[in-house]
Length: 126
Image (cartoon, rainbow, N blue to C red; front, top):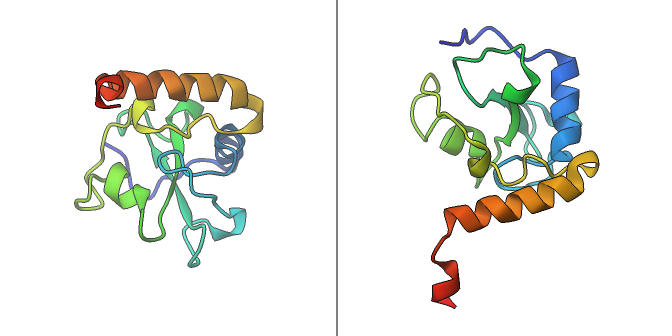
């Protein structure tokens, strides 16, 4: 289980910021670098994808928005429950995980494939 006093190092957060293109990994909302865990717009939190992996792995670092109405950090990262309840986040839960410029092409193809996998009957609804 993660220790709440631990945090991701700044170098991992910067890499995650680039990977996500400064967007919330879940809803795609634009985040503001200065508003880490404070402010009213573009507020965000570095959250672990899996609580059993720790705070030293880049692949475990996900940036989620914390401002309303989405508040993906609480609603997705903690499943809308107590802050000590952690969800296991899979890549298909995070459609904007690879929204950054260096990952743009791969990210778009990957998001499309994950979306199709998570919505198998979408074609029949049209």
